[in-house]
Length: 238
Ligand SMILES: N[C@@H](CCC(=O)N[C@@H](CS)C(=O)NCC(=O)O)C(=O)O
Image (tube, helix red, strand yellow):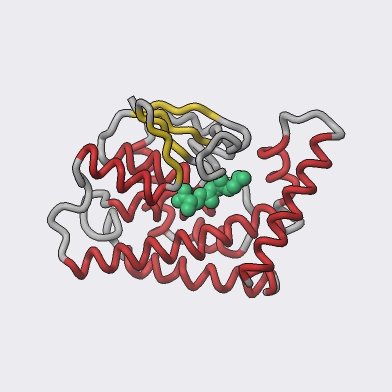
């Protein structure tokens, strides 16, 4: 049985980690059994990131590499029958949400004043003072430096929200009235899209992208359908 090391359920989601939720969604879409072990910090992860997996003696980090490994071990169960154009669209959407929108989730959670108290509570709430204030402040500074070096951290909060809104509106247009991004069943790209998009819809984040996504029938329906059908065991009260 595969073990997924992930952040524990929080904010009404099976995990507040966009990439952790991507991986769990992939495993459920592909019907591959797994269990979860929850961690507070990814100190034991081979790449220092959440999620990572253990399968017998193998430990592997980064959802891109994990999913390639799973496809090798269990077969590519989600992309069968897609045309090369559909696969190319899926690739472009996956890169957009993982490389841009997911970073904006990080910015919104960690670096906006209105969302920082909730982020600190979920990430560091179990720690005692003075460690809690000290370690959370240092982690926040590290994220501020990362975002600055990447470049996105040099923009204003409104500019960053507008950059993310462009992605979200493009997804809304591509989804239209379909149940999934490409056709009528979940494909590999839906794992990335759901894992990241739902983080703007269910958690109590306050930002322009969340306001837009929660009010979009297309985007809210997409996420709610996947949660209901593929995560029926999830207790939203957590
Ligand atoms: N490209 C990686 C991204 C993983 C990632 O950024 N994970 C975040 C949590 S969602 C993380 O572990 N950040 C470092 C940390 O929390 O210390 C993947 O696909 O797994």
